[in-house]
Amino acid sequence: MESEYILSTKNIDKSFKLDSSKQKVLDDISVDIKPGEFVCFVGPSGCGKSTLLRLISGLMKPDSGGVTMKPKTKLAFVFQNFGLFPWLTVEQNIGFGLKMNGVPKETIDAEVKKQISQMRLQGFETKHPKELSGGMKQRVGIARALSVKPDILLLDEPFSALDTFTAENLRQDLLNIWQKQQLTVVMVSHLVEEAVELSDKVVIFSAKPGRIKKEIKINLARSRDKRSTQFFNYVDEISALVQS
Amino acid sequence: MRYSNQLHTAARKNALKNKKKSSLISVVWILLTFLVLATVVNFSELNPASLFGGFGVSLYRISVAYIIALVLSCVIALVVTANEKIENLFLPVLDVLQSFPSFALFPVMVASIHSSETIIITVLVIAIVWPILFTIIGGIKNRREDLEEAATIFGAVGIKRLIHFTLPELAPSIVTGSIVGWGEAWEFIIGAELLVNAKLGIGSYLGQLGNNQQNILLVFGILVLMVLLFTINKLIWLPLLYVTTKYQSES
Image (cartoon, rainbow over all chains, first blue to last red; front, side):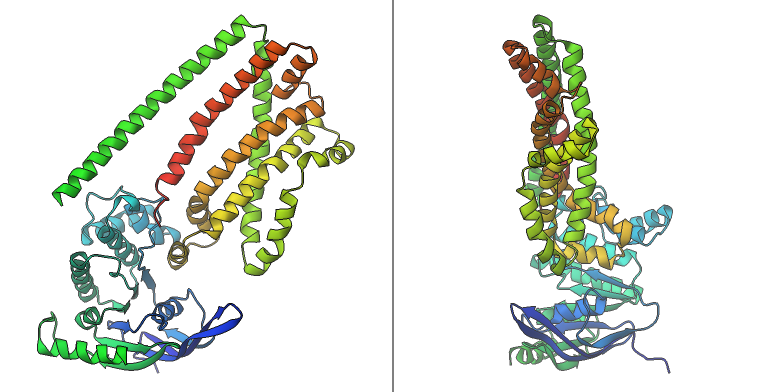
């Protein structure tokens, strides 16, 4: 029987070597994510949420347990510090994934053009990352990820290196893209308000080792009123769980 | 926002002005170099064919040795840093080998290699390989983890990874190491050409002037060599260094 989930992690354990000892960062992590769901991992520093994202992406291997995905599921990753290749221009960065996958040049050019328009990067096509502001860099990072047409978009604290206004604009852009393209989004955040604003489901982690404390579904209609009582109730509940 | 745009425009104008200035200096430098060289050679008894021909032959030898050393350095650096165990095993060995004087191997080379051309190039490869190798290893050790992850996530594997990610990422280290390597090479080629008694080469020509007690000509010859080396540095290596580091400095 086919699973209703696009992504599942089952009983994942992960430790890192620290000098001569081993430090367990994730303990028995099981999460199920449905197609089209927007899920946020929230927790204190060092709870292993970014490590879990890397395990899902295949950048790391778990010590035990596993990650299962629907066949032919494509992933893309957006990095906290953008992860843009400094020697490439904006359009070359956006087309990097397609080029590496052997996509014909005409198709790459068309997709890059589409992403530049979608992420409002017109006029910056031939600039290098060094010549861009933080917000523009992250727009390029998101455009690069979207250009490979992923089924699941993984984001590791994508707005934490940005100022408040830029972050808010990018959050709205991300929400629009998610709704329009019916993507599955898994995002790591340390901001509870951000998680409540964006997510269908918030997964709260405890630290050292990282364990799942609770999963909370956010039953608020979109677009969400960040000044509503229900919004604050969710924020208070999650904040209390993170701090406890 | 407006203030930031003004600053950006001012910075661009400044960069363009600097670039124009730099191009102008380069042209003046080339003209001056040729003028100085022509004057020195014309008013001295330096033999232009031997001097410039010798310089050309030496330049050719260094270029061949450089290409071999560059390929060797890249391969060794990537293999040695492939994983922690190999690195722990081989890095100390390379460190010891690096301090071994190249000319100490000279008698062995003379006894085992019968072509003086091969001996010179071998000595040069040994001299050039170390600075390039260790700057590349340094570059690999300091590379950004998020860029590595991004390259992996977006499918950069095998030869495509090498061409489109690894080499551009290491370009500043390669150029820095190459500049040091070429500097070493010019030192070593003079000695190597003298020791094997090469018929052609800048070292051989300067050696002949010294043997014939033509000391003033020898000084002129060395001056001409210095000007040529400065010119190569100014026209090739410094622009390469500028291009490779220009977009790499953000962390």
